[in-house]
Structure formats: C-alpha cells, structure tokens
Length: 272
Length: 156
Ligand SMILES: Cc1cc2nc3c(=O)[nH]c(=O)nc-3n(C[C@H](O)[C@H](O)[C@H](O)COP(=O)(O)OP(=O)(O)OC[C@H]3O[C@@H](n4cnc5c(N)ncnc54)[C@H](O)[C@@H]3O)c2cc1C
Ligand code: FES
Ligand code: FES
Image 1 (cartoon, each protein chain N blue to C red):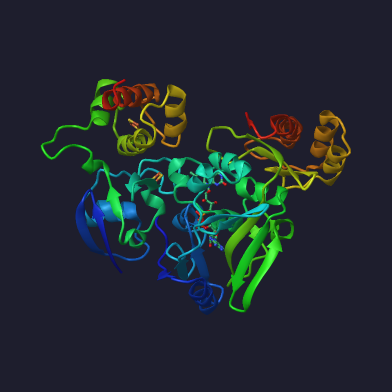
Image 2 (tube, rainbow over the protein chains, first blue to last red; image 1 turned 120 degrees about the horizontal axis):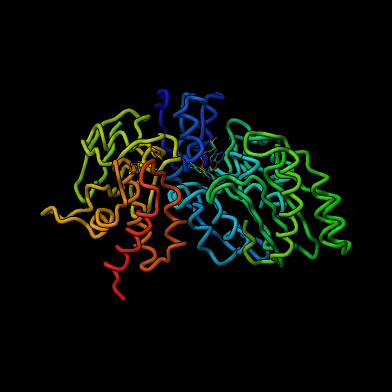
C-alpha cells in the first residue's frame, strides 16, 4: 500500500522543525530515519497532514563523550552506534537492532521517540536513567527516561516537541542479553544490567508497555544476593502478556534466564 | 516536488509527489524496474539499494529525501558491455536464485557486505543476509554464492 498524501517540509533547524509542527496543529509528524514511521504510513495506520523531515538539520548526528556520559544527537544512525568506541553497551545493543539496511537509516532520536517497549535503545535508556533533551516552541526541557516512557509507543512528548539529544552515562560494568525468534527481530525479552556510580540497575524490555525497572531485584543485586534470587525476583515483578509469539509464563521464565545471562556476561556479549 | 540525484552515475531529475517512495520513483519514474517491491514496509529486503554507499530499504525512503544523493541499483552492477558482476556470476553458478524476485535486494545487500568485509565467514554471511527474505531458493545457495564471490573478488 502507499502512504496517503501529505505536505513535506524539509527543516533546516530545530526551531524550524518545532515551528512547523506547531503550525500543523497536532496533524504533523517528524520524519527521521523513517524505519518505523514509513511502514505506519504505508499501512495507513497514520495519515498526518504534514511531515517534517529533520534529516538535514546540521549538528544532530554527533556522538560526544562528556565526562562520565555520552551525548547522542537525535540523528545518530544505529550503524554509527555499532562502530563507536565510547559506549560499549550502546554498541552491543545497537548490533541487535534489525539488519544493516535498517541500522543505516534508523536514528537514536526516532527509536527513543517511537518508544517500542521491546526496542533496544529505550531499554538501555531506562537502565542508564538517560536524560532526554527536548525542544519545543516555548524553549527546551530535559526529562529522565524513567518518566519519559509513558506506555507502549507512548511518551510525554507534546505534538510540537522534538528530541534533540540523549545523554547516557557510561556504565563501569554491564551486561546485555536478548532473545528474539530470529536475528534482527524485536526482542521477545531483553535485559540490560548496568553498574553506574557503584549501583547496579536492571531494565527489562518486551514484558510490559514500557521498559521495566524491577526495583526489588535491583535492591537484591546491590545487597549482594545470589544471581538466582535476583533473577527470580525480576521475573516475579514482570506482568507480561500472552500473544502469538509467546505466553506470559514463557516470557516470565525467559526473563529469569536472561537476567541471569545479562549478569553473567559483564561487558561481554550474551546471546540467545 | 522536484528531486535531483544520481542513479548508477547518471544524473536524474524528477518531479514527484512527496509521498512517492524511492522504490516507486526508481521503478515508475525512471523505468529502473530491477529494484523489486515485496512487502513495502521494510521487512523483505527486495527493494534494497545503496544510497551514498549505504544499504537502504528503498520502500522506507521518500524519493524527495534522495535529493542530492547518489543511488546505486542492481542495474549498475554489470559492466557497460553486459559482463556480469562477480556476484551475479556467483548467484548463477551456485543456484543462489530460482524465480529471481528477491535477487536484486540480495545482490545489493551482498555488495555492501563484501565492501565492508572482504572475507566474511559463512556465519557472518548468514547474519548479514538474514534481512532478505527469499520464498524459493532456501538460502544455502545464496550463502554459497556470496562466499564464492568473496573469493573471486579477494583471492587469498
Ligand atoms: C524490518 C525492521 C526491523 C526492525 N527491527 C528493529 C529492532 O530489532 N529493534 C529496534 O529497536 N528497532 C527496530 N526497527 C525500527 C528501527 O530501529 C527504527 O529506526 C526506530 O524504531 C525509529 O527510528 P527512526 O529514526 O527510523 O524514526 P522514524 O521512523 O522516522 O520515526 C518514528 C517515530 O518517532 C518520531 N520521531 C522521530 N525522530 C524524532 C525526534 N527527534 N523527536 C521527536 N520525535 C521523533 C516520528 O515522528 C515517529 O512518530 C526495525 C524496523 C524495520 C523496518
Ligand atoms: S519492499 Fe522494501 S523491504 Fe520489502
Ligand atoms: S529466488 Fe524466488 S524469492 Fe528468492
């Protein structure tokens, strides 16, 4: 199928992009990598009146180490994340996003804004308590990932706001483990464990509407509990749904196993 | 809306609706029907082309977004005199295709892989080609073909 007609505006600055969105009065959409938006348009699940292409806005495709963080401009393509040396956890997580032709177009800002709960970058952002930088017609604001993700494909972004960058702390130790039916598919269950400023955090994707932070499991982990106890607690804190891909029970069992694998992998690749 | 880009080294000027995908522009406005459309939502890989040297799903990019870019399609693989590219030869020799519908996307994906990694192992080839769906051949011939082309292009 083909997208319904729309007006196309190529923005040359963040100001121009948010101004155009504001003028579209709720009927505009940002077009970044297009790897999630274009399918939605093709299937006519959305038919915005205006598309604001942000790909030519200068200065948004940079990866900048800033002390203990790495700042990702909104237009950093997933393929660049895989290659960069500053944030090994991000490099590993990005390898799991789709295939090469998807990673060459998809962007960090688009992935965070799209907020798919089984997508890699939102789960990493949740585990690292990333800071999302947002521009709107009235100025800029920053929000932590924890409150930014509001529900499945739902964030606190207003219709005329744009993500400009994301700051992610570089963890001292980390583990990443994902199970997907085929390489390149979205995760059925994915787990990020990251030690930041001496404290471990866990985030789990694919088991709820937003990346889950299992508070009790994190506490146990930081208290030095056995990995099995941490894994069991994390699984107990999930409330996954059954769907055509897997039952809730299966997802819960996989959560326990993949928490174990993420913790066992410590900076190494932990694969299904 | 006007867009100007090069395809396989030739400059093209088109005037299209913004909603025209790059895949449709190549096929319908420029008559380059080598780029195939299977799913039209990014999953099958049949429409894969290179844009500024990177593989892209042509069904997930608007033609107007290619303005100023350089696009390579399967039509640019063979030499001027019709001599097939080593990848094309290898797909023939190793039975990397049957109906050929998925083949343009397979070839462009493999071209990009061999450009980045001159000597990938079979596991890597599988991993990289796994984003391209084939309904008839069953992939073993495809992996054999990419492996053979790698050896032909970069003999050790
Ligand atoms: C076959 C296939 C497989 C895939 N597999 C995976 C996978 O395994 N894991 C994964 O994580 N993703 C996967 N994806 C999705 C892909 O990673 C996308 O890159 C990503 O979800 C969206 O980023 P984008 O830049 O393409 O955004 P777009 O598609 O351009 O936009 C997505 C949404 O975000 C909004 N948006 C974009 N940029 C901004 C911004 N800067 N500020 C505010 N809003 C913005 C858009 O308006 C739109 O609503 C897959 C896609 C395909 C087609
Ligand atoms: S037609 Fe583009 S990926 Fe299937
Ligand atoms: S050869 Fe027929 S689809 Fe691949």
